[in-house]
Image (cartoon, rainbow, N blue to C red; front, side, top):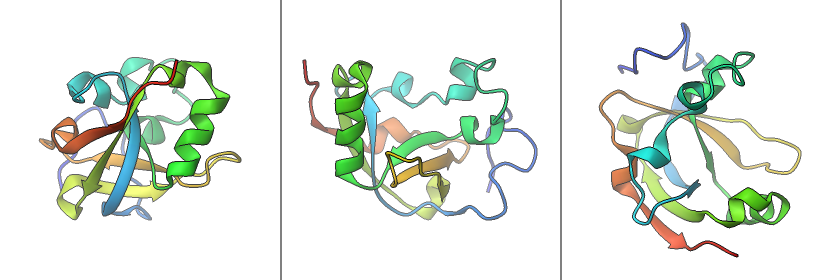
Length: 128
């Protein structure tokens, strides 16, 4: 599988698995657009220098409660919508990357030429 040129060496990691299943992510646009699927490595390379491979991927969640918990905890996410999409192996690779508060957080390394915004749909709007 081919990945974008900006991915660091050995990324995705060897233990990553083929993408599969329903995932959710925060988006600013309805319907989601290309701007909603830019990895942190491109948005803020200085901030992500310590973890470039994880930053090359997109953050997605497998559990709706985790994404809602994050929305309640962090004000900035209340203004965003939540979109969901069905991943398939040809979309890239994923690996669980849980945090203390978001156990279902997963990093998704999107394969080259995949346009993820095209198969995500908003199912929950912003909360003001």
